Image: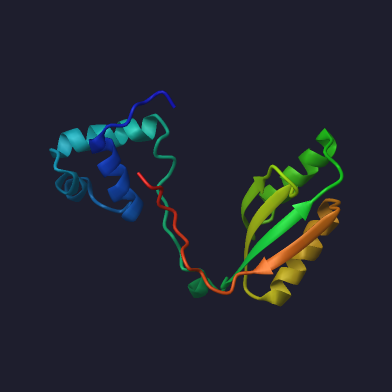
Length: 153
């Protein structure tokens, strides 16, 4: 990113991370800017892709996806064909909210949301049918002590 963020940009980003539905008037008041100056800054942050998207955060319990699962994946294959197959599976399985290639002993960590342990088992079977894995283990989240989308600006 080429753009240097000043304190006003950071205030705008902090406010929008808390509530992306703020009107431009409310946001301008919060960050102590005129409406037009605030609008220009927000548009600049969007154009430069500092703001990637504005989304609604849905309560997983309200949509029957109350079980959060951390899936640890190891593979013995690292060729392009396998990588393409794995990438396609990850992108097409909607239960996977995040997929991260790791350094160290693990190859990948997946963040998965499902309704139940039985739903996870069905997800697991669909995943291993699509791509060969050397080892896969899952840990079910018992309590979310902290789970945020806000970056520390």
